[in-house]
Structures are given as structure tokens and as C-alpha cells.
Picture 1: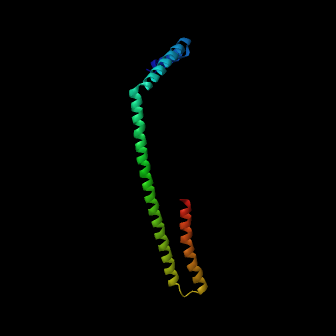
Picture 2 (picture 1 turned 90 degrees about the vertical axis):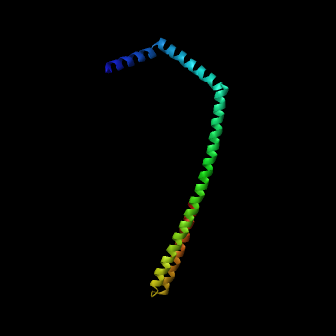
Picture 3 (picture 1 turned 45 degrees about the vertical axis):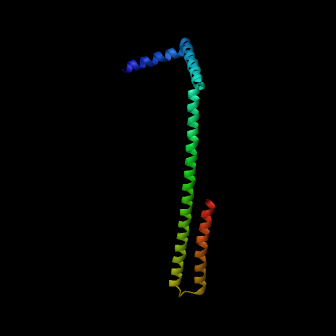
Length: 130
């Protein structure tokens, strides 16, 4: 079987490589091009192409609207989550500073100002990436 496949490959290569084979190939190629051009000009084909284009535009518009809607929802959810996390972080810091209230006023002052700056800075950073 392998010998047969090899022989067929050699024969095809010889025909394609010979002058006569090249000429036949070129005639066949020209015929295919001519038939394709005639088919493309056919009104039925052009009607089908037009309908396909209209359908693609309709679905592309629908898909774009859906993506915009989903993006807005995700953005709102992310913003709500960020605010919630910032609030929880501030509450945690306040509770920890209240429970360690026996410290000096300078350390409690610096502790309370640092957490306030962190959430607002992180939310600005998040907003800058959008």
C-alpha cells in the first residue's frame, strides 16, 4: 500500500511539474476563476450576501448593547464592593484603635489618619484604572 501511495505521489508530481501538466493546471484554474466570477454576479448570490450582511449587523448591534449593559453592571458591582470593603476596613481600624485606647495621643492620632487615607487612596487608584 505504501508503494502505491508513493507511486501516486510521484505521478502527480511529474504531471504537475511537466509543461503539459502546468498548462492543464492553468486552464483549469482560469475556468474555476471564470465560474466563480459568474456565480458572484448572480442576483441570487448577491441577495444572499446582502441578507447575510444585514443579519450580521443586527446581531453585532445586539451583542454590543448586551456587552455595554453587562459592563455597566460589573462596574457598579465593583464600586459597591470597593465601598463596602473600605467601610469595613475603616470600622476595623476604629475598633482596633478604640480597644488600644490606652496608648499615647500621638500614636492614636497617626493610627486614625492612616486608615482614612488608605481607602480613599485605593478607591482613587481603582477609579484611575477604569
